Length: 264
Image (cartoon, rainbow, N blue to C red; front, side, top):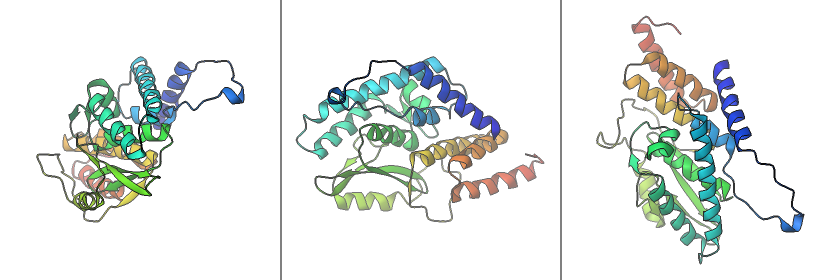
């Protein structure tokens, strides 16, 4: 566990110092809002990857901040919040979310466009945070998604990262989608070798979402019979999000380890 904390601190140190640029201070009347993706959260999601090329991560962070600045500049051109959010959703999907695949990492998303519901949702959430937009990350047994708020209408829209057409405004359609998300996915959509015997319907933070990214890697390693790696990733996940699903999976790993006479 100590190694995990040291690793995260090291990644943050590398990224934050690599990106630091000294600029002359502006007078208060000259200052303008410049949206910036959180380097701490970006680092946390990137650190899920076992091997992390710091130069690439730096380039990815700079790229996403340039993209965020361009979104902010275009924001005023849209007649209302819903129109801007629609632009944001589809622009992100076309540029970054190229190929759906289960158990992908945040690094995969930037490296080759592979993503899953956790990493796709993380990207949208990081962008919305940078733009100071209010949203909720919702967690169900087999899925995560975003509910984004429209202050003008006192309403909300759904961001479904795994669907290229997943910008949903109709409230009945949103309710129907939320009910569907409680159901196990089909085998054609995603491997689901771990079944939950309890309901999950949570509003979670970005840190907890990062915990789910580590959890997904634990499940993937377990599915491929790499028990030591599965245990490692689950321990890291539980640091960030000690959820009920983590405890249930920990029990399964413990039983498997006992059968294999593996101690940890």
